[in-house]
Image (cartoon, rainbow, N blue to C red):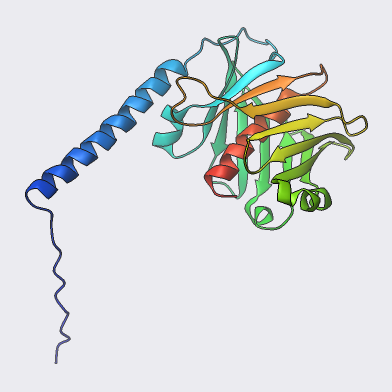
Length: 236
C-alpha cells in the first residue's frame, strides 16, 4: 500500500501583483547596482609612494563594491587622497582573521582570534606583522567592562609582545560609535577612531582616525576599526 503525499497548492502572483513584484525586484537590483558603481568610483585612490608612512590622520573606509559581491568585509586605508593599502576579512579559516596589505601589496599585519574564544565573555585578538612576528595582543578587561556595561562601553587592554599594557581602548558598543586609545599611566588620549559621515558612503562604514603620538602604531587602529565593523555586522 503506497503512502499518499498530500498536495500542497502554491499560489503564484498574477496580474498586477506579478508586475508589482517584477518592478520591485528591478528597483532593488538597480539600487544595488548603482551603489556598487558609486562605491567603485569614489573609493578608488592612487597609491601612495612605496614605503610612505601612514599619516596621523587617515580613513578606514569599507569598499562595498568588493565586500558585497565576495561576501567579505574589505576596507581601504586612505589619507590625503592616496591609498595606503587594504584590510580584508580572510575566510574560511579556523580563526577569525584580518589581513592588512600596504599600497605595494605587501602584508603588513595579520590579526586573528579563534571563533570559540569569541563566544565566551573574554575576547583576545592577536596582531602579527607580515612575517608572522607577534606584535600586540588586545584583551578585553572584564572587570572594567562590567562596571561600564550600562554606559554601553567595553574596555580593552592593548599589550606589546612582552605582555606590557601600552594602551587602553575604550570602545563604544551602543550609541555614538567611536573608540579611543588612552595612555595606561596618564590617561592621555593618544588616538581616536570615529565612524564619520562621508557624502558618497551610502553603504558601508567609514572610520576617521586621528593619532596624537608618533609612537602609536596605526595598524592597531586599522585592526580595531575593522573588528568593530565586523562585530556589528554579525550582531556581537
